[in-house]
Image (cartoon, rainbow, N blue to C red; front, side, top):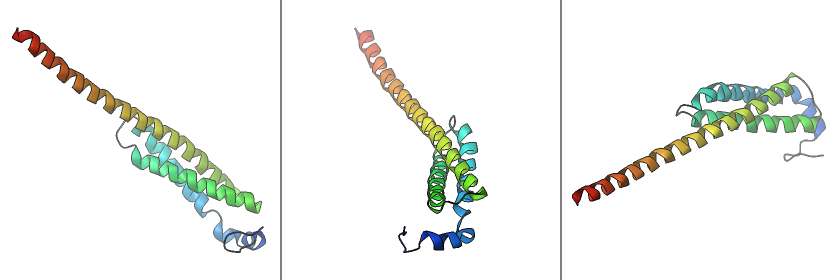
Length: 129
């Protein structure tokens, strides 16, 4: 089974200590940042940076897990990648809920302003008679 660059699984398995673990650790760190920062930001306005961190954690963890699955490797690095993947998924879901909440909130405010301005003009029309 060959990969894109012509590297076989055996050669990649020999290089495993040099390559593996970097994206798994980055995925875990980004997942923690996205989750810990994203929980309070669901009620605040800074949802986007934590959503980006969580999405990156999800992507990096998934690609690292695919590499480990292809190589048949198991270890601490795989658990870090799996942890980053799960934290990225949870953080992305929380950030999505926060973004949807903010969109609904803004739509509610705009609707209240529009209805309020229409109500004032109707009151003025009725008081003129």
